[in-house]
Length: 465
Ligand code: FAD
Ligand code: NAI
Image 1 (tube, protein in one colour):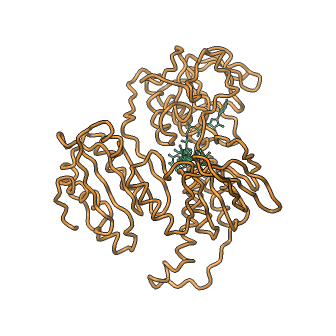
Image 2: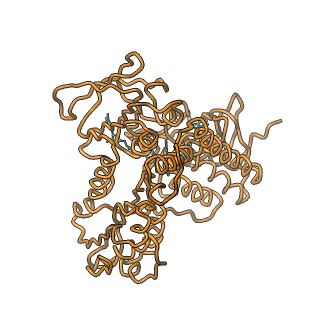
Image 3: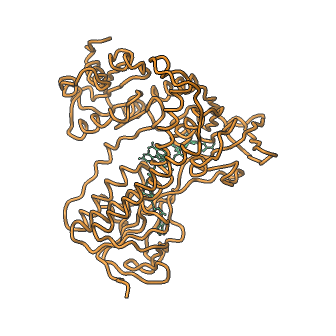
């Protein structure tokens, strides 16, 4: 007889759900996790963070060899050839290893995997594949899926979403990306490096919405230099398969004359929306907000006692590490401990080349709110390591409160921005001032010294510029 009574049932085994389940089990709660995919790990491990980073890494290696970066350092590689199938093999191997790793962790921590779709039958019971399971507490961690674009039907062959774009069997001649956000620029980078012409069609007047204004401008400059064609303030009204390709109809976002663009492959990447359909939320009494998200309080409770929600299905940035941290916090709360997330300090990274990273507030938002701020900026060109490595594009920008000097935001474009931002997040978590960062000894020569110099620039006294 299958066990049907648990202390906690988590629905969804993505970074939010699998982490919540493991932590709950570690804390002595009898825990099950429902997942309908063949493998654990959710969007992130199966079709998101991990496979995209595998291809970003591999395509960067290819470009370094193919475009002469290695040769300029005296590393001659002869005829550079792309073996796309081997590259895809590397991606699949990374996914297999990591999703299998979560299965191992479930067994190790005695988390029961309930295979199938979970659907509420009451606030404390769910149906999975025809069996009813009950729990004192149920955590919804069902994540998100691609937002569809009316008039552009995804067939995963010529018109793909991010999942299809990870698996293209050949390099398209012309890839058109709809949406100049994180997915568009990361996956656009992969296929551009492998030889595609890439056009990004973005509805707004700039790419990367939500990021700091100077970062958005500098990023656009860098991407254009790399060969991206950026069509901002443009909307797609139709995409039709035509012969071997796709004909896109576009027009100015504010309205105007339509024109067409021919593409081999079109990637739709205009955002993601929460997964709540078919979850039986009415039976649980859980309501959605007007963006289709599940609102929660400080303790991740949905307002229905015993029903919690975390990760992409709730408001906030759709990021794996946000979901994971919420997973730990909700499990801590369910086990009677304190579980806290500081939603003001969640770093984000775009894994293009160079990388783009941010934590905290943007200059525009702070100024719009009338906050008195000081800004320190330091170009990577003034950083000895970046200059030596010939990867000196970008800058570090530190924004501090003018009166208290407390750091309110850090924005970076640099080859290793994703690694550098951790320091800024930790500093902000500890309430650091720009002076605290400026007077912390940073190892030389490292890219991180640019953070110290940007902090020194807040008071106008950087050394190396
Ligand atoms: P998900 O990972 O979406 O997991 C939810 C799981 O629930 C899924 O496996 C789904 O099958 C399952 N599920 C849904 N409904 C049910 C049900 N009724 N019953 C049973 N199971 C159900 N974020 C980063 O931080 N860094 C990155 O580099 C990054 N790269 C990305 C690249 C791409 C191409 C994409 C698409 C996303 C990327 N993200 C990245 C975002 C990241 O993947 C998500 O923020 C993260 O996966 C959210 O975790 P989650 O646990 O909330 O949901
Ligand atoms: P996004 O929100 O980052 O970007 C979508 C872009 O599409 C925006 O620039 C938006 O203005 C534009 N857009 C919307 N409608 C449009 C239309 N009709 N025509 C043209 N442009 C339109 O969403 P994206 O890139 O799909 O990513 C989804 C989520 O996945 C993001 O929230 C992100 O947090 C997460 N993700 C995170 C990654 C990371 O952390 N490195 C990598 C990939 C995804």
